[in-house]
Amino acid sequence: MQVDVAIDLVDVMSEAGLTLSSHAMQSLLETCSETDQHFRVFEIYSIMSRHPHHFELNGKICWLLVHCCVVMKDFECAYKMVNELQKKYFKYKTTMYNAIMAGYFFEKNKIGGLEVLKQMRDANVKLDSYTFSYLIENCETKEEIKKYYEEMEQSGIHLTKEVFVALIHAYVPCGEYYEERDNKDVLWNLHGELERVLLLLKELSGQDWVDGCRWAIRYSVQNKNLSSTIELFKQLKDYYKNDAPERSDPLYFGSKKLVFNVDEVSFCFLMT
Image (cartoon, rainbow, N blue to C red; front, side, top):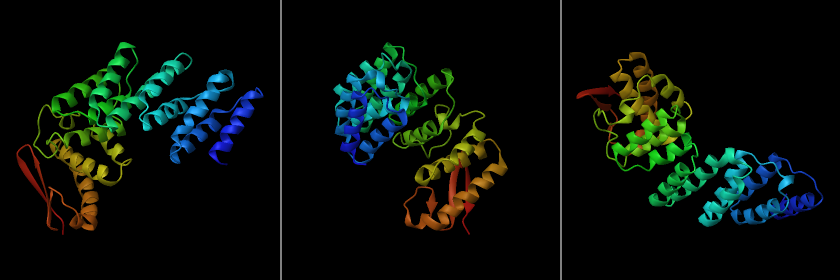
């Protein structure tokens, strides 16, 4: 069904006093987003505003409504929706603020992203793992990264896939990803998190998996976990044998070996 036809149907159903399921509403908004018809959110939200009792929203719907505005760079409308929706759907307020924060950071507007954080703190809105992943990935120093990660831990939030990937991405622009161990480096100090990281690696793909695997090898060596080190290296070796000759990589030297520096000790893994 075409989006415009679906919206007309939603309008007719609402006028007739019928309740639209959250699944149908979510599917409609997802279609708008996937087909670059984000502007349709205004029509949908207008119908919802006229007939609020005929709609039951979930967190994904609230996020999509705000996200569509953010994609169009209409942050004013995004904030307006958050302020209106939070009256009935306060439990999804974090999700909606996250959509705005992600939009600012996507536009490389760090000031805007941090302003969202300030508003969340002022309103006592609880930060979640997605909030911290956005903050960490857009840090410019190791000190910033450590500050947000420690706050996340103190909040009782455990390491998630999003946060792990954010940590990996954050250290690259800081110029620290390939450096030796540093007590300020969160990735070097995830005490007791190796098992968790190994599970998270299974959820990653592409370059994120490669970067995560290389870090996990370092961490395994540091913690003298030989079995994990060997298994991870086998996986990374398969990747490099197939793809690395086509890549430019600071840890790849020709087609013969991989070199890692851990606590001033060099580890050389032969590729043959």
